Length: 360
Ligand code: SAH
Ligand code: SF4
Image (cartoon, rainbow, N blue to C red; front, side):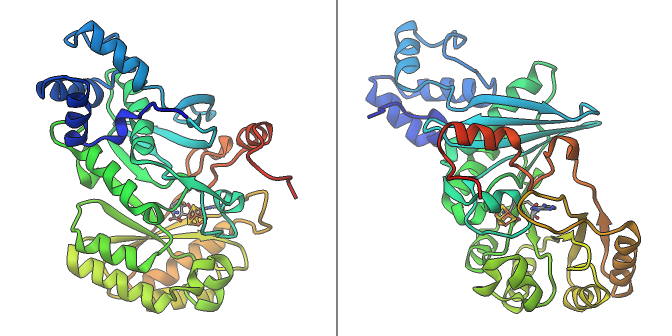
């Protein structure tokens, strides 16, 4: 049995208790917290104000290399980097770094795989392996914070749009957000974090009630239940009407605009009918629509909409006073578009490690 712990799993009080258990005074927790979340220390050797014996002990019981980088891919323009990490139990997750002028955005994972099974999504196609711990979510950020700091740069934004459904792993996701926004620690503004959800209704209500300053994006992708049932299985549980009601509740509670995500699939959800239905649904709401031509994936036959269809769709929405932006996912050439986090590397690696069944 592995007795080692992941220090990134501990909140401040838990870190104090952990150090007390090692016979250390309370002030050590502040020192260690600062090393972890202000200096993004990669190991204990660098922690010069901690006694040597403690550093050795920590290296034994709580090593910081909880994520092992397995492979890295960079987009042709060099602005997007995708990293495949192996977790302690062999699970594989991906994290994406996007550099754009003054912004350094990370797209992080909250689960290994995903249980929601959206038909067009590479992560959905691989199925669910397990939730990530809060520390495994945080460690992805620390890895890139460390890398950026070597060039005197900082993580400016985080999107929870990597592998997994963040609201299905609610407690660990929120614990990770708390850790990342701690003023005495990493201190990222909550408004710089966006959580993307497929639309788990009770969890969105809870999220609204907690009044976090974190932004919300919702993957709608269809404006009729018939269409959404086909693309997004969870719609059979919570219908569009109920989801929209919940989003209105969220907006009323938080006063914040919700981003609606829509992957445009040729002949499927890019029709004039879907555009009109969507306009009717969103009319008058505090929302903005992100239109993203589908990234083709191995397990789904759909194709991205033509430019003309995208433009027509956008125009129809505008007729209802609904604002939208057409986005092309960054890093398409390395399949680092969010929702495409499963490439040959991860498949080959997973096969090698026996994590996936036979490919059908
Ligand atoms: N589970 C969350 C967050 C991860 S997916 C969610 O579903 O919102 C991040 C975004 O990528 C979602 O909007 C998802 O619908 C979208 N996405 C997934 N696969 C895609 C694909 N093949 N092409 C375009 N967008 C995709
Ligand atoms: Fe899961 Fe989001 Fe992919 Fe759906 S789109 S399968 S919720 S990761």
